[in-house]
Length: 352
Image (tube, rainbow, N blue to C red; front, top):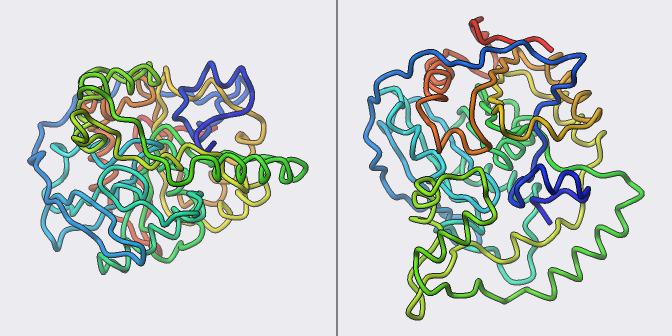
């Protein structure tokens, strides 16, 4: 499925929802990064966002918008089975001149599900970001992505570098990949499982508390408070109980996984500044030589690659936003465009 890894070892390391590999921090190239962030800045913005609906061909993409309409445009993309509230903890730290729009990816939160018979794939979600950009009327903007949202952000930046000023990747960097020899089996498995559940709905849980318990059971790194925040958009009242708003098809395997060469070809077109946030207890322990090569390629191609390792688990931006906040603010306050500027050096700068 979209967010799992076939290797049994990686299944133990990654929660079922993880869909992207972390930065490869091999022993020979491990970055010497600060474990203690600078003091968190004082919150400056309200956590109450404007609920907006963006029209797309199959329905609407739901989003929460913060900050002035004419502010610097930044798009937030959540991870697999999460929703726009994943950035709820970071919203108070938004600079006053930033327009931050956090979306529910199609098939998640309050966004429309894709039509019957349609797969959810990384390629489709990249296209969805372009639909969103057009609907918002943005020519150039910055991206913040978590986990699967980070992989989507990376692919979008490679496909449409002319639109991306800078990109912040939190606990994710490249999509799940496979070899050409697995293509036939992957496609057959995906089609079989997709057709078996197409048209079905999430079962109704007896209470919101039961739904939150179910969410926590598959996400050991998520705090109860964070689960409660996500469930504000993750479940709705239904038939005397609560059901998850996500589309069950999101959990089926993707029919075509990208190869290393395909992902690298996207990286080779990224020429903006990139910041990557890695958690000490997150995904960095599950890496391969392939991801190491791709991170090295990104370091060579991007205008700059700023790698920051911070204490926390995979959802550190939601569990402990004050830890991420100084770097989040530094990223958002940095002047950049697809054609100019360079990320300023900082004590947390890392070179692999």
